[in-house]
Image (cartoon, rainbow, N blue to C red; front, side, top):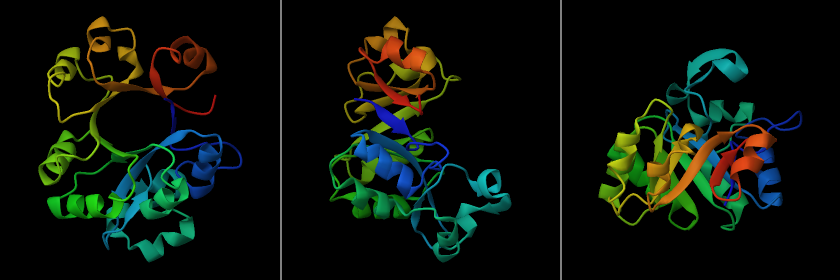
Length: 207
């Protein structure tokens, strides 16, 4: 199983937009998308904490109501889920630390979509999600700054079903032996994709 990172991105589509996700689903790929909570507690699909990189506006998502984000065509998570028609895996990366009230809301809003998998580099998000509902599909993300030891400590934790790992761990034998579903990110070249795609699940960008 391979997943497109932030949807198809090219001259026609921006990252994390409905058009890019629709194009990804058309190719029968699952997607990875990042989410934030707005000031009025709406979940939106957007990577950065602020609008600065993409829109040159130095405002934080958490301080803006959704009605003021609509003009930028930043989609609601619900819109993306509906677009998927419950047919394709959606890795939902929780970017900020969310309180338990918001995590409960997230679980409630996604409960009818059975292919959602919650992931986060902020591991407390996932641990708190599992406290609310131990049956949600969830995984922990690890960057290239994490040690193999920090990954291995979760190998026997039955609640954690997925490991999202930097591609530097692709050739690590100890990591490969962990009996959990592992996804490696971010594969950015066709050479990398062809080298690893047959034996590994990858999160990739346009190749």
